[in-house]
Figure 1 (cartoon, rainbow, N blue to C red):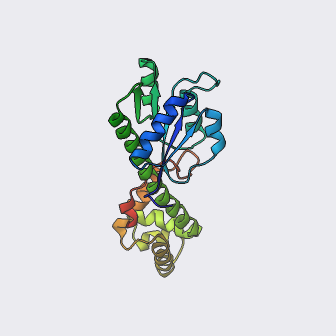
Figure 2: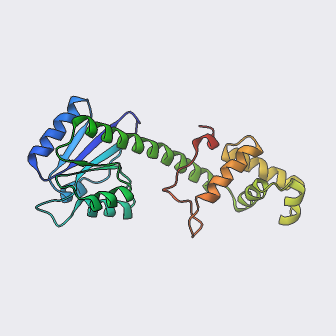
Figure 3: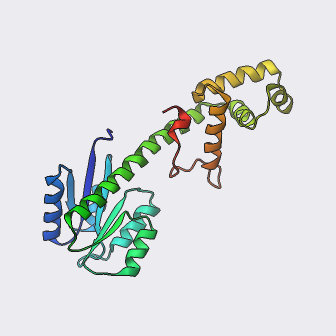
Length: 226
C-alpha cells in the first residue's frame, strides 16, 4: 500500500466526541473511521494503511478500558500508534499509557491543534514502522533463499575470515567457497564486504532467543541499499 494513504481510527462511546473529532479530521483532509466501542473496533480487523488510533481511556458501556485495548494490541503484535484522550486528569494512568508507548495523552476538552499534532505524530510513526517492516520482510525473503552452506559462509565472511580460512573450517576447497560466496552475495544484494558486515550485524542483533529475526525490530534501510 502507498505511504501516502493514512487513516485515523477513533474509539469513544460519546457520540458528540466522535462527531467532533471526525469533523476536525475531515477538515484537514484526514480519512477517519469512528467506533462507539472497543468491540466494534476489534471487529473491524487489520488496518492495511498507516494509521493512528485515537482512544478514550474509560468506556461507560464496555468491560474494556483504553489501557486494556492498548495491552491487547501489544500482546497480539498489532502495532498501531495510540493517542489517548480522557475527561479525567488521572496522572498515574497517563504515565502508564506513555510508558507503554502511547504517542500522547490529551485531556478533554483539548485544543484542536494539540490533537492534530498528536495524530500527525502517530501517523508519521506508523509510516516509518511500515517502511521498516517492508525492509524486514525483504530481508527475511533473501535469507530464505540461502542454502545452509551459503548461510555458514555469510556468517564467516562477516566475521572477517578469508576464503582460505573458511575453506579449512568447513572442509571445502577455496574454489567452492568462492562459488558459494558469490551466490550468497548475489542473493543478499550486497556488493562489498562492508555492506555484508553491516547487514549481518543487523541480522544478529534482531534474533530472539529462538534464533528468529524479531519482526518488531527496525532495520536500517541504508544497509540494504534503499
